Image (tube, rainbow, N blue to C red; front, side, top):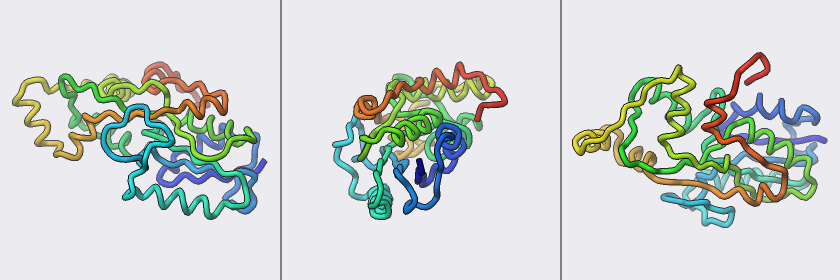
Amino acid sequence: MNIYVHTPGREFLWPYIKKAASAHTLTDNAGEADVAIMVSSTDIYTPGELLLAAESTPTNPDSAWIGHESTFAAGCENCRTVILRCPNVIGTAMTGFPRELAESIFRGTFFHFKGNEARVGAVHAADVAAAIAALAEMPTAEGIYNISDGENATLHDLAEAIAFRMNNKRISTLSTKGQLWLGRLIYGKKRYRAYTTSRTFDCSRLCRTIDYRPTPTTEYLRTHVYDENSL
C-alpha cells in the first residue's frame, strides 16, 4: 500500500511514522497514494476552555489549520483521505507548546501555580504513528478524527513527567498571593491563560474505527526504558 502522510510543523514525527508503517510504502506524491493522511491540530477548534471536544466542535475561523486542511484535501481528491487532529504531541525533537514547556522546565523558568487544575490534551508520537498505520490499513477509515492519550493529565502532572526525563528536575510552586501575582506578570496574559485553561479532546471515534489503545503520556515518560531501538 502506498501512503502519503502530510505533517506540517511536526516533521519530528517521521522517524516514528517510518517505524510504524514499515510494512507499507511511504510516498511523497499524493497522486501515487492509496490513502493520504494529514497530521493536523486540535488548535483548529474554537479558542478557550474545551472539555472532551469532539470532531463536530466549531472551528476557529482565524486558525491557519483551516487552510492547511483545505489545501490537503484539495490535493488528495483521487484517494481516500484522513485528517488526524492532534493535541500536544510529545516525543524526541517535539515542537510547539510541548517544546516550549520542556525548554522552560530545563531553564528553570516554568513554575507550578498552586490550585491550578488545568488539564492538557496530549499524546505520544509513538501512538500517533501507530494510529496513522492502523488508519491506513482500515479501508473504511476516512474523514476527520481526534487523537489523544485519553488521560487528559493536568499541566502539573505533564510538566512533572517531562521533568522526570531531565534527571527529575525540580519545579518550584508559586503559592502565596505575591508569588502568583509575580508569576502572572512574568508569563503575561497569553501564556498564563494557556497554562491555566483546560483543553481536552474526545477520541472515541478513532477508538471505534481502529483498535486504538494509547499509553498515557505521563506514564510513557516515566516508565519507558530507552534502548538502541527507541526513538
